[in-house]
Amino acid sequence: MKSNPILCILLTTALILILAGCNFPSAATATNTALPASPNSAPTATAVPPTPAPPSETPTELPPTATIALPSPEPFTPEPSQTPTQTVIQPEPGALFEGTFENSILQFRISKNGQEVIPKMIRVRKASCREGGTITTLLAFDPPPSFPITDGQFVIARDKQIYWTGIFTSARNARGSIELHLGTGGKNCTVGPVSWYATIQ
Image 1 (cartoon, rainbow, N blue to C red):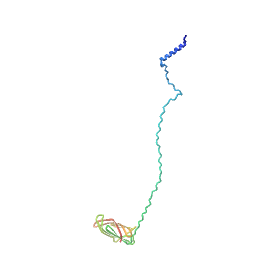
Image 2: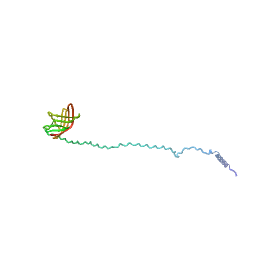
Image 3: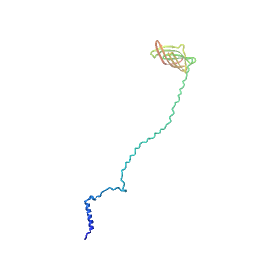
Image 4: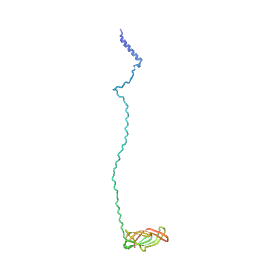
């Protein structure tokens, strides 16, 4: 049987290639080169920047609270109190009044027209002095002066020695205050002011 020379050559070549691949493994390793991405390939994932935190809400300024203006109350004006008018009492004309104070006696007369007071006398009996001690003396009015009665009241003043005030509480009664500045034996004595009460004799 004749051998085919072409077939022998092909087999020999294939055997050489197989043996060469076994002796040089690195030759069979294909160089891995990076190929550019095809246009149909999926896009490379990129890092997503972090979402910034929402800004903190600043409290909005509230509108001013509305106030209701109430009408001001009208000032209260109290009605003027009506003071009862004091009744003016006229003493009995020509009457003689006698009163007492500090164990002492005083007398005065009403003029005939009822418009004046006429002091008669002041008899001081052991009246207490502000300076200490007591005094006894008689004060006479000669000639007797007269003092007007105004609105039922009168004032008798004499040389800073006597200050005698009075008011008529009825046609037959009177009251008041008296102050005396006396001196006897080189001693000064101030009596009062003290109250006195008198009635018609």
